[in-house]
Image (cartoon, rainbow, N blue to C red):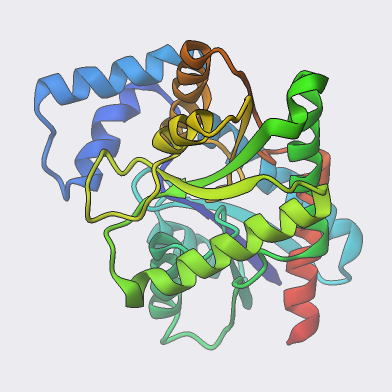
Length: 301
């Protein structure tokens, strides 16, 4: 039986999960009360559930159904997270109990981040003593169907901008910044750049840039910062901006606000148009693209 582990960093399912989530990130240490209060307030600001938790759960169900229609072998898709339940080791044990003989690791990240790399390595280590097949789902960022999904999202956002401002509208692709380390950053930056360029070519966008978020103004982190880039381009005559996150198929709380309402506020202050490209999320086209990607991994064996 084939089993796919659909992985994300963490996905609290309740406000009660916020403290355990961040305690797990800090290796069991509970963050100070004021930190927890600020983080909880951010989650409450959503006005609904955590989008990453909701999306990854539905994607797993949809992907399992799509693959069952395509493959002759039985297949199951499991959610797993680094810092919230169900944790990766527990999911691997469940899969072994279920009789999975082929394990496919599939992160929510289309580009290879340090977290995605660690996920692949952890699963391989957990299964090292077992007679099973392991397929690491890597290098799928330029899949044709995935590019079509992103093209749709960027095109819809571009069409939202006022017609008279589109010529001077810029698309700002974003991922989480990282401390500058040329060796560790190389694959991350390269795949990010390749994906941004491929989407722009497909969507026929000329004015586009790769930018970073969540660097918190640290000078030794990857740049330019997306908010600073908006200000710089505006000074050069830009009249509209579109943000498009490429690190994850689904929004997490950090990216949800930073490239959404926070960038929108800057654009309102500058009196320019703004639109955020939708995340691929748990839509039909995303699930079909992921099914094609997984199918290609299996056929390549």
